[in-house]
Image (tube, rainbow, N blue to C red):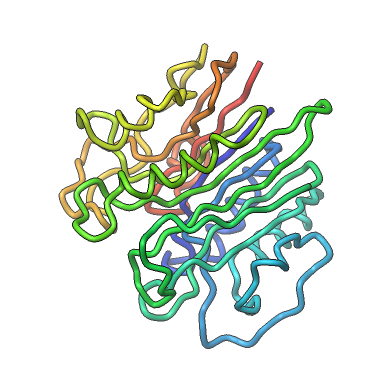
Length: 275
């Protein structure tokens, strides 16, 4: 089992098409079973497009797919390189006053069930603090497997603090049987004590970075990025793949960092491979 996560920062990057194609190239090279994506955008004012046969998110699509939907374009790029992924995308909020900003999951395995969980007090699409989690259920080796992709808020937010979002998510996931993964941008530096990262671990989640026999790279963001204007030049680890049980992890590596694939976003990606 391989899982990849990336905050794509899509449609906000210079040379965006080139970077999207680099993302597709590395996906095809690694062939992850499941891909969790955040900041998956489309421009509000663009024309609508038809959903392709691999799209499995119709139940949540209160906003039509637009011509520049990043997930749709990435699926096409991957398909052109010889791989087919089923996929689901949900719009979460207005981003940068011009995007439908959302979450996406791509899967090489058939998607059985999809879930869209509101994590914040607000359900106002125009509010930039609104947060959701997108989940899919798969069956791998005849066992249920869930993966949720998230883009969490900050620990010290007065209106929508991380702790409230986390408690809603964790409470919901406790109802699931089998293996559950959480992947995405948690906005939770692991070197700040008694905050977001510590709270996740306290609730019996395992950081696959710490479970891995081999690790390559550590930080997933460097310098000043959105939400972290005081970001460390040396780097921060704020993107994670967590799992609800102790598993044998063969390898955990940072990708899209200029060494392992080109830089495609203001975040680097992660890929985790089980033994």
